Amino acid sequence: MRMFPSVLLALLIVSPLRAQDLAATCRATSSYDVTLQADGLLFDRPLPAPTRVKLQHGSLRTDGVAVTLDPEQQDRLALFERDLRALVPRARKVAQNGVDMAVQALRAEVANLGLGADTRVEFDRRLNAHAADLKQRIARSQSTHDWQDEAMQQYLNQMAGDLMPLLVADLGQQAVNAALAGDLQGAADLRDRASSLATDLQPRLQQRLQALRPQIEALCPAIQRLGRLQEGLRDSRGQPLDLLQIGR
Image (cartoon, rainbow, N blue to C red; front, side, top):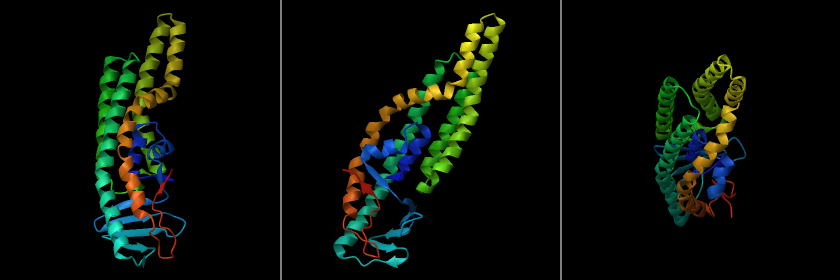
């Protein structure tokens, strides 16, 4: 299940919050991906049918078949499309705020590691570059396909592969220096700290990023309104449309 609106999945890249945690905030999920197109909205999924749903200015097509709507349904569908488009920039803003918050949190945690000055400067340079790239990706994204698990994991691996070795190397050098100075226990502690760095950082970052939750919660009324607007709409086979599911 995908969180809705799935643009908020961008947050998963910058925080340890899981999809189910974010979905639970507004109690809204969707089995569809959604793509913003110039002439409408496209919802698609592998299975079950309908696998493609197109909303366009109050009209509805499911798997290529036009669905007959009465005027009231057309109005609600047009409002659904309008409101979803209006929600996207708000969700992008929350995601970008999440990037800023994550950068601040990570920088604060790293400041406690006692790194060398050169390492701190290089870490900040790389971190700022990744943050700028991520915010640009969020700003450009027109589809939740951009934030699928595989693509997100690949992006996370690239970030971690760039940032974490820098920290581990510095701690490793500190361990070598401690050993050369005869502080074997200190050297062992530093090696342990380096090996568990990523695991130890995650819960502390998660706690810091809970401050983002009120911004996500502020989107919930608009998401719940989308749920109400789709009520009663059916696909070309007469089945409930259910572009998103709202929990009680």
